[in-house]
Length: 602
Image (cartoon, rainbow, N blue to C red; front, side):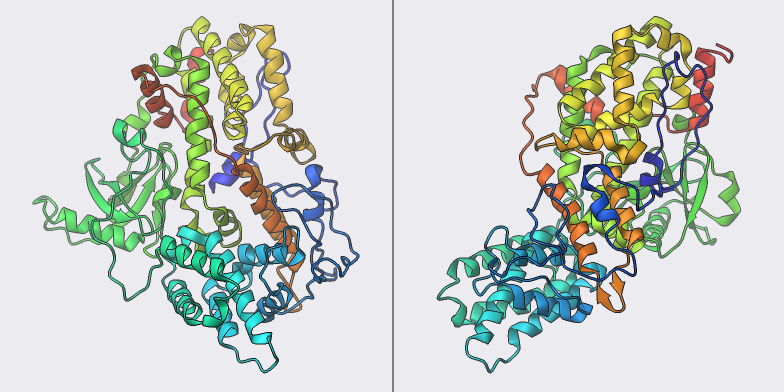
């Protein structure tokens, strides 16, 4: 099950006054709202636009980064930069249509329909045209001969405008695209040699030069830089110095350390690329095992297996890539032979539970909430906006570009289980009620910080069936906090397509951290509700709706987050605790703990 499907569960009220002993919940399938139903927050415009039989039309002039009214079916007046609606076109001709619409000086005017179409195509072109082919077409348009006076120069300026916007949008992702990097460098050299562009576009040429240098394009025949820094994935190692570092974005070529366990729970530590295939990982493990006399005579072929804390096992195929970021919270990689597959069991620390006080009992709610917000903001900032498109529309093929998004989804699930873990490891009833009160207060502060990811995760965690059945604990909660939690439940209610949440989110100003799984749900509904190609023509309006979602994410991060966090030893201890949560993600084990604290019938 993907992290997104785990997170999109319908929460119910878990206060004892309304639900004394709710039944255990099962994961719900991906929501399938009626496209004709009204959607709050302006979403109906995106979700019902494109029935297969509808005619294709281009979106009207939008305002980037914000909510807008549904596009008018009437074409915009010709006085707007001379830009009329983009005509439906085959994938190979859409770029040509864009270049013709761009003004002679490039796409500069704010509010220009051509500028909007440029951003739409750059963000979503991979849905109908591979990036390498897109850049090859751009290269061809630059060298295309023109006989009309001035037409060739106008086309070159338009190509420069598209290339600049492309580089500004993709940035670090191009480091993973060897073939695309080669095309960009060839086009860059052509532009730098073309003196006809220098007279009026000197600033753009200099900007292009800076962008190409910043992106550090990767070309196949170039030697990779030596001594590349190894980045630690959180949860792989519990080192204070690692978890206190500011999070940085991961790329497929980044190298990480990872432990791969044997059936006897011994392990080898390997250094591997984040995008490494299962076959590459097994090759590294085999090389390590050759130094062990015990394993030197091994002749059986190894397989790579993921083992969850619940005991669930899954064999990974040799061709699978980027498996590190898709592991469950307490899942681990095991290397074994097929004969020893049945003997694999979770690590002892994932099964044995030791009740006791943790940092949450000592720290103030404000400190925990602020450190949650700061850490989740770092993770949210690491996600490239195109990862949202790749995650939904490309599936396995786009996994290399979605590592940071998958880590944030994993963290959201981790916070949910952290709530239940802390409560169920607290044996004293009075102390447990105080902890429940503190968690509700932390959720309130996260909401005040506009960290809706943490807020949602905590509320969902308190709605876990193993927590909601603790009647005695909930009865000790003060009435003020019972009412506050009911308001939180209403805010996270998925009825009417999360109407309450969308209304609150629309009133917030950046910076803010949204509930990311809901964005992925909206994109998935967009993808499944309309076709990208109709009769061989690109559904331009679908591309625009997708790009609008991405621009919304861009708006959320348009301002820096400013939180005053002290650097005292106690604050560093709280920071380390928040960034390295120890959680139980085995629902059966959570229920066992719950029934020990308050046996059935209470």
